[in-house]
Image (cartoon, rainbow, N blue to C red; front, side):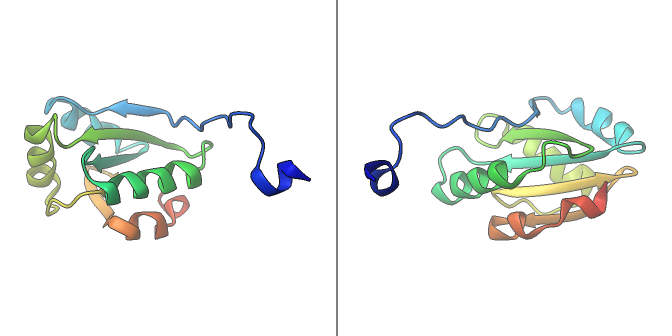
Length: 125
């Protein structure tokens, strides 16, 4: 009865996504090239923003680990130059948090804030 009321004291296993850190501008050419054969996702995250953290937790919780896409994580605060170049290269105005879906070298969809978790990523695989 107490477990139902207060929950179990056993720690929950945290879901870990297959993030690839995006930390260098040179990686953008690789992402562009790989997008010709496999969907590429870039999640731009501000580690100091509560909304960004909340959206990221929801994204992690809902993300399908069987997804056929490469998933990149961009820490905006530590890699501002990379974030700026993402905007220039893929012609998307910067927002945080933000998710970009890249296929055939171009962004085919993007969303920010709560819109990230409303995206149906399966349709881009």
